[in-house]
Length: 478
Image 1 (cartoon, rainbow, N blue to C red):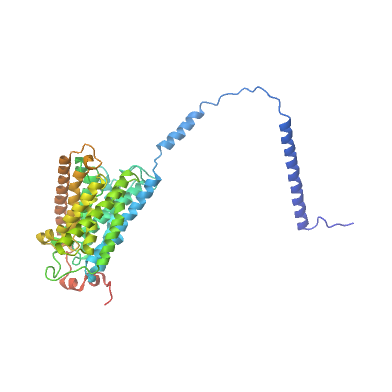
Image 2 (cartoon, rainbow, N blue to C red):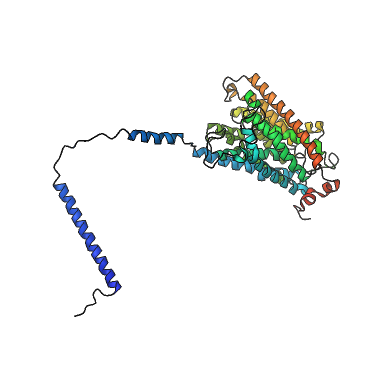
């Protein structure tokens, strides 16, 4: 008799599955029985000779531990904070500084100043990687490092750590953070001669100034050069950034000349809300600028963070009070300018003074900078469009000098046994050196740029506005 019980692939498949199930049950029962039997009937005990492990295994473990200890490492919290700080400093420039300056110029020139800041900042970032970092942070003489040792970050890799002055950060991160300092310092200058300079002149000037003024000043203060060896305190850039840029702006305004109608007609800011928003973005970004200069998420960064809050608030109150007394009405533009003055003033001191010192520095910077953009500006007879020298130059000088006072531990600072008189003298020397170096170098650069491109646009182009004549566009439709 024929049967179809195991015919067809489905039947055969079912049969195989049944056999596998029966086998698995059998193995389970057998192993359970064997295990139970092993538990009930213990094996006879025997005396077994145990030999110690070979001593040779220990060196292998030690070698692994030594290799791990020798491998470069970093704190992930520090890295996260420094990544954030770098982003905050970039926020200071675009859009912070761009909006701050953009609101101060007339409507026909707003796109011009926005373009200058963005393109100058971008140019300096590239030059920083090309040779700037190398010339600042490599070994050299008292004024310059090597322009070629780390050119285009030669020798750096994504995994390299410890090849920069800050040993606890990935090398690329420290380079990125410092690049934003170079970029914002150079971009600050363009506000002084806005509304009348040629675009190509701005770019050539920026490249030369970065090379001959920013690089040496950064090396002299932060890269082991002359002023750093002397003991000058500049935590985040009072001399390197603000006095340097402020003096360059002043010299540049003299060379380019006054705007048409300056002193005869009112050349008012076209959009104060832009300037206000830009100032507040600068305040937020400045926490990366100041607290980020601690290069770690630690107590020093916390001190700089708090000081950045307090000094700025004190400067706003100081500027507002002076305007209320002298003019009868405090202005929103004045309050915003006071915030920037306080940020500038506390920059060199933020990591070494106490909260009380920060308040005093901010208050003094706010009050003195009012005079810097009014009385001093008239005395100098200069058309500094965005008051770069009056705020950054004067505020930087105030902050640098008072750093020598309030960094003393006896006045709430962090420097024990600080000789205030001697430190103030060192700070004064650093201020004077920065002013002289920057003024001379800037004047020479402007002479070169004048010969190559000329500095100033034509009178017709200036009257029409640089948005149309230099960039072929207009911010606002008529």
